[in-house]
Image (cartoon, rainbow, N blue to C red; front, side, top):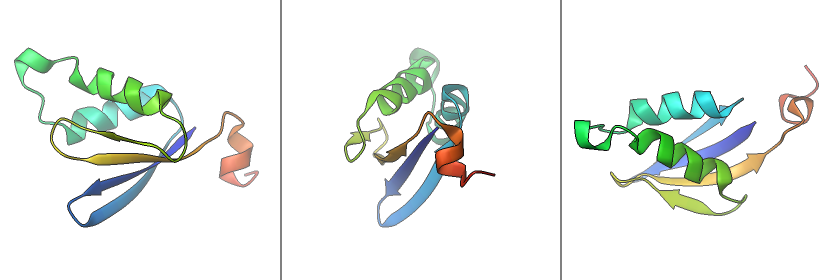
Length: 81
């Protein structure tokens, strides 16, 4: 599980993703994918997934995506639900 803060201009949105496929799907939704860049969402998701907590990645359309937390023990981030 990964928790990220996505900043666009002055707006910040916090999202959590259980697995990498969910993150890829979200990247497809937020990116303006053109036929020449069909693999851009996958590449951005890979960069985000591999980024350390406290660091950030910029998307090709200006989003600043900061990794707020990572947990591979799902109970730790879900509050033992």
